[in-house]
Structures are given as C-alpha cells and as structure tokens.
Image (tube, rainbow, N blue to C red; front, side, top):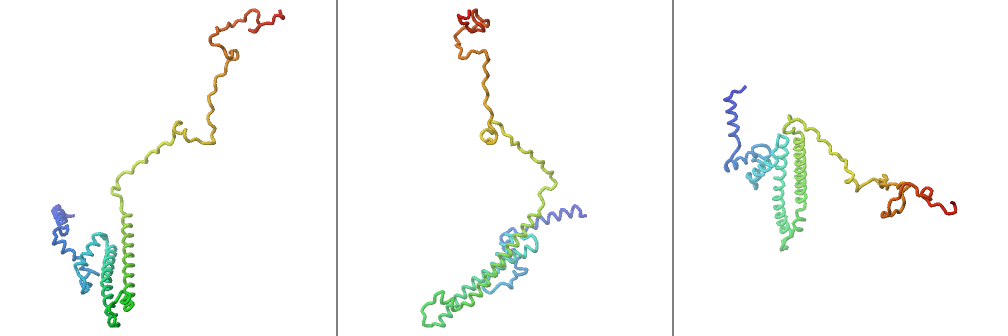
Length: 236
C-alpha cells in the first residue's frame, strides 16, 4: 500500500505531465508520430516534407483520438492513404508534363500539344495511376467506416454516469376522461341523441285557453246545471 508521501508525489507528477504548453514544445511534439510504423522518416520521398506528414498525422490523431491500438491502426491507415493520394496528385502532374514532351519528340512538326495528345501518348501510365487512386480511396473509406463502427460500439457499452442513483418511479398516467361540454363536439353517430325534456301534462280539469283576467270559478256546481254544464229548458 503506498504511503501518503508516495501518493502526494504521484499526484504532483501527474499534474506536471500534461504535455507541451509552449509553441516550441508543440511544434516539436508533432514529430512524435514519425517514430513508428508507416510514419517513419524513411517513408518520405525526395519531393515530400516530413513536417507536412507530421502535421497531417497530428490533425488526424487529434480529431479521432483513438482509444486503443485497433483504433490507432485505423487512424494510421487513414493518414497513409491520404498521404498517398496527395502523392498521386503530384505524380499525375508529372505524367502530363512527360506525355507532352514525348508527343513533341514523336511529332517535331507540331507547334502545340493539347490534353488529348498527351493522354493518348501516355495512356497506359494514366490508367495504372487511376487504379492506384481508386485503391487508396477504397482503403480510406473502409478504414473510416470501421473506425466509426468501433467508436459507436464503445459508446453503446459506456455505463451511465451515476449507476447508484435510485430508479425513478413511474409517472401516473393522465386521465383521458373529458367533460360533457368538451366532448360535445365529437359524438358517436351510433348513439341516439338525448331526448328533449317533456313539458308538464295539463290537469284533466284545467280549462284550455283560460282567460287570465276572468274570475276563478267556484268548485261547487251552480243551480240549474249538472256537473257544471247548463240543463236544457225542455228537460225541466
């Protein structure tokens, strides 16, 4: 078990080892990528610059930030293929110049050479160059797709930030019952509409079309009448 002094010393060393901070130190650290594998200085051609390759490698590693050796190999493959594509562009420019010189050598009477003349003079080299370019592009995109797949897999397996947090209780479902007033705009066509309120039935003895200004009649029958109806004179 480390002592308190060893723990403090380790913490202090880790705080100091944060990489280069000055402009000169950062410029020098760019060449760290040239110390291994395909980025060795022996891979630099006579018309290429080691500084340019170091800057390209630093940009790729900073952008993709490989987490393990497999991802680092894929990032190195991206750098290698882009560097070759840049080289093929310079080769193509030289091929066009050489094809024009060959055309003038074969046709000394010609005063000018166009692109078609130069291409037909050196067509075999252009076809081989295009096959190399196609191969670099396929390797580049294949490595980029695999790198993205591995990064997505790592992100999918990352545990939550706080695994000890208690699970959240389920939220109660909101009631979907609506009031009669709010549901009145949409009703089931198969449901019969509610019946209208019926008017009160008049009493049997109520007089229809009664004059409200007339005095109320007595409940007792008047003389000379039967049940409130007048008796004919010939019946007496």
